[in-house]
Image 1 (tube, rainbow, N blue to C red):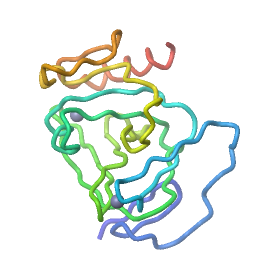
Image 2 (cartoon, rainbow, N blue to C red):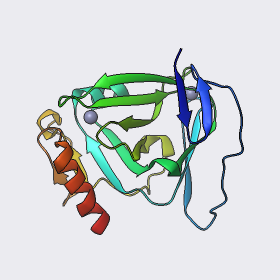
Image 3 (tube, protein in one colour):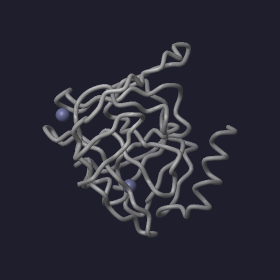
Image 4 (cartoon, rainbow, N blue to C red):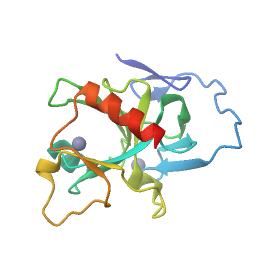
Length: 178
Ligand SMILES: [Zn+2]
Ligand SMILES: [Zn+2]
């Protein structure tokens, strides 16, 4: 039996087992809601993303059914589940990283994920905001798997594969300063 603690909610196999009041009211910050295709599983994010990245790795292609995934990275505590239950799927990255995907058990949309490389952050699927004005990617990963017709915004930093943890930390520092 797996137990997870997600922003103050405790879950047992994806079911909420207690319901402490966790939504704080730091209302000055921008808030956005990401939701799955059926609308049952929702998370609220607060503030602007630390970074936005597009990834063309084959796992992101299979996860989304599209040819790349786009993640907006937020501080872990800024991403709070506000509705629905979820299931998780854990996969291994090329460099031994573990990535945990949180997805709706009904419709299968992955809303967010966590990686052992970036324990203080959560990646939220940008498509789940359904907001065409969402900030564009500043970086593109796994360029070696990018479909030939895909072009990311000019100036987006490109990586042929997955950055190492050291490279990723340096990249995030750079993006935080820019
Ligand atoms: Zn759903
Ligand atoms: Zn990927």
